[in-house]
Length: 247
Image (cartoon, rainbow, N blue to C red; front, side, top):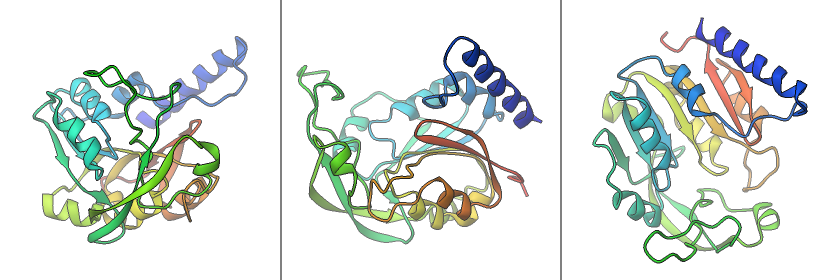
């Protein structure tokens, strides 16, 4: 099976790193070569949840020539940047968050500028306002860990659930989910319990520290997804495989 081969490849990679002095430090995240091995169907269905300016969606469209990519982003600032790009017509943007219920919710917008981590505006050459940490959850330890990021502005955004969206779009199977929802992992999962049953790979950011209010760590994610197993734990992300994705 693919999972066994992937596990072998990752184990071999870790062994090589150990021999050359990398010890057992987890990798930063999934790499292009990994994702290309994971997604087998040529007409794959890929979800990019929390796409921001669409970088990962753009990557997916280039790596998989026939895949349909569905991108979700509730922050209008990020949406504006994504819409200004000349992206593939196979990328479908939904200007909403995925949560536990259908309706509207408060979204905590991130702001701030940091010379070390900020993104440079292509037109002005100036550091852009930081819009990559916004969440349905209010910040907690985030304020201490990243003091240069503020969350002074709150807006109301449209929210749906993964289950409701799949039913509306008639999506039956999902090959790969890339989720970056900034502490709202529980909201995403609880709103998508049915859809996740027919999702093969679920890749999500996590933190065992309460960076956002009442956020759950890795064990909390695993408790909600008993049919999934860990393929690899990265520095701030985890890749999970559904044991029986197609029923």
